[in-house]
Length: 120
Image (cartoon, rainbow, N blue to C red):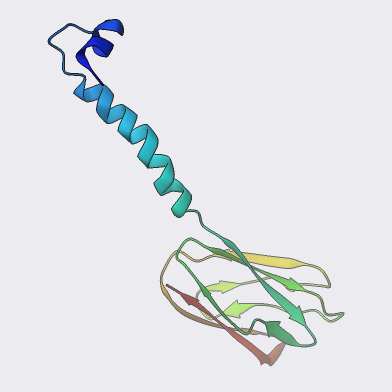
């Protein structure tokens, strides 16, 4: 921003407009960072006594939603981390992952049903 522009905005002639330049730069750059930091909603389907996908990679801050498409109730349990209520057909359960790590989970009603969420 030139000195003439600063004067036209009502600032004294010796004012270097540094604060305005920084504000303009921040207004341009900051929204770009926010776009890249958007958390995602990921989906896991429960169908035919399986979790699909069985393994899912997500980022810290992402939310995973499990939806039961079976005619049989199911749960989603990761010992000590999260536990859904019993989900009937078309019910869902969501969990937001705030810590990196591997989260093994299973259906407490059908323990052979297992899955893994890898949080980076």
